[in-house]
Amino acid sequence: MYTLYHYFLCPSSRFIRICLDEKKIKFKLQIENYWKPQTNYLLMNPAGFFPVLLKDENKFIVGPSVIVEFLEEFSDLQSFFVESKRHEIRRMVNWFEHVFKKDVIDPILFEKIFKRFEENKNPDSHKIRKALENFKFHLSYFEHLIGDNDYLIGDKITYADIYFTACFTVLDYMGELNFRDFN
Image (cartoon, rainbow, N blue to C red; front, side):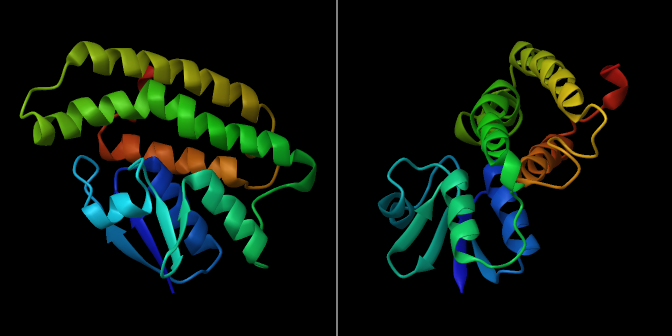
């Protein structure tokens, strides 16, 4: 059985949890504190980011993109790649992992959640507003991508759509999904 080291408000961790569930792969969860990971976690992943999938003792798969490639390579179950659009799906997964998280999720998560634990300070509303402005840009981009399709890339659910969902569930948890403001 696999062990997934994660943080419940990390969209990358949620992304991999959904992928494992969709592929019907059994796993157990090991929560790590984002702001203070345990020593054994840092030995698996000195960079300290999430998630890490433990396959066997001492076999760690680190990071969402690497875990997805591992799942595709070693699982005969449902694929969330469309063969002719693999490059575009990877590009969008990378977009969510690096651009969307940096522009939108990380600032809101830090200001609304981590700042209280880490520094015992109040959120900076200017940083939250800037992240929400960035969110409007990203929503316009996603709307453009979807166009007349059912999903972000074509008419079949892909890893890009799963990551999209994972990010939105984090924003929803923090009370930042109000689509009336995004007309």
